[in-house]
Image (tube, rainbow, N blue to C red; front, side, top):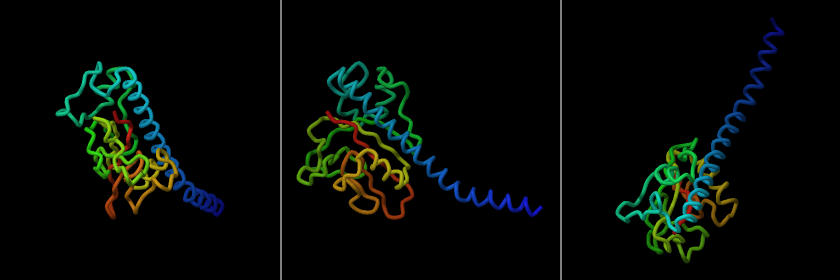
Length: 194
């Protein structure tokens, strides 16, 4: 009986040490899958652009500015055109691939608009203004830790593009703004603009 209690104690200690690491690995794998999916959509979008010379609807038909933002660009266009095998589905949060109208050069990026300061240069706050549309991924219900990890994987460790304050990053290809104490938020990831 004493030996059984000893074995169970050892198992409990090992489980206590390993379970947090297992959950950490699972979370990391989900962020990796989301990042891989974003890069897959970006590649498909570049193939679409290479074929038609613009971002539009199926068969390269232009999308009227009154129909922007054009939601579900992945399933309604890239999938139907054969550039994707399946619609983008993020294992963390919920995802939307959309074409949004480009905004004025002086428009500063915020958490969800189509302005992106890709290089961190403060003289030109919106690097996507020279196009008519911006293709981006919106990830909703993302934890701040996952947002930071996506940012690290896509923007890298460039100090110029890192968070400007706790929970705020509006520089680079990944941007988000989390209010103090927020459990989840929205992450915008730049794919292209033309």
